[in-house]
Length: 596
Image (cartoon, helix red, strand yellow):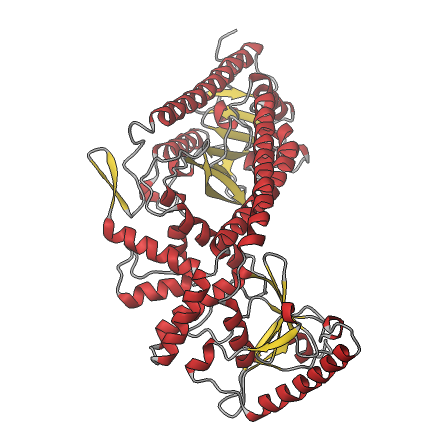
């Protein structure tokens, strides 16, 4: 028998439908957006297919069923995984369902376009097609595989598939070895000339660009003081700071790229591009390769500023109030917007200012919607005055130290748990090798548990950074004093905005809860677990069992209580004093009679 007997003269073949399968491991190989820029892999497969169709006019190319797997690996079997999004997997399903007729052709550049898996898996895929009546054509070596093919031809296919698998395995091993070597020498020389925009490579060393480093530090400082990234971008644009990277203006997204970059504290995380299907479209995603390399870049911010800025960012993303991560606008009227809630229904307290003839109040948003019975109106300026005046005296150092110790222990536990989960995942990958379908379920569970653990780690680090920043009262005292000074000097609105943003962030960091009771009392629980009570400009001083009037920091700003406020304050305070005197006369303490 002639070696070419399996190749039936095409002129005698009956008309048939041909399906063209193309696969590229990387989307970069295709550049499909511009036909003039097709790269070699995509162009080569198209040219081979078109040449074969021209030589075999009995074949009609199906142009409706486009079988292109761009960015899917044949080595892992992602393109043929029945649970995945590969077009080859879809073709196999259509064949099994009988919707693609026996006698149809599948044109591929070579068998390794269908699979680079282990030989037994790759051969099973090929045999499954030909046994279903599909004629598979390998264009590059001009081989046609059908159910009636000679056994020697399938031996050739086994050798080709084995070679393809070994090549892929060798490439993967070499890539891993290359990165391992790069990581080993990373402290001695740089892996590439690419670096953050605030650095430059000079004589093989990364050096800070001083003017940009100053901007980076200013951006992190503003973030740590409660500024949103959009507001920071607007500030940079107003100052005329030229953005890096060719953009016309700063945006919140470009600011976030700066504030989230761990290269600010010297870390370098190598990445690689992987591709995954989303709603039928292949998209690229950068995924980390190995652990971060510490001290690869020069540090440009200290740990304290970094930790505090990240803590604030975490709180803005998962704020204590529904709009905690939103914009502040150009003024900060309500310092308590992220922490003040109704004691009755738990809804946020809304700030209401109806103009110059009225006075700002806090009002339960649930009551406004008809869903809460708390109809009390909390005069805003009175309470802000009292709370700021008290805030400068607050000392959290004792309670914060114990809480920090507990959080630090929990943090170490969570980090250890994450490392254990990562080791389990790596063990599963080593065990199943390229057969990713068998690893999907256990890996998904591990990834979910790791995500929960990493979220908890971020929360604990944010909490520790907050405790560290708010333990003493120097910053609070300076922030309030600066605000009072700005009011007295009638400073520009931009400066007042910055000062009030800073205090708002201090309040967010210091208060655990701020509950507004229906009798007018406001109970604040600080992060050390202590409770503090306020009402209409007075603070309940526990040691002396009495309400203390605070003339306060804000009176220097020109604020004066109106007659209605003074009258209401006088009525409840007089009633309280009568109750207190009666309690003392009866020989009982007043604490139990305090407004709850």
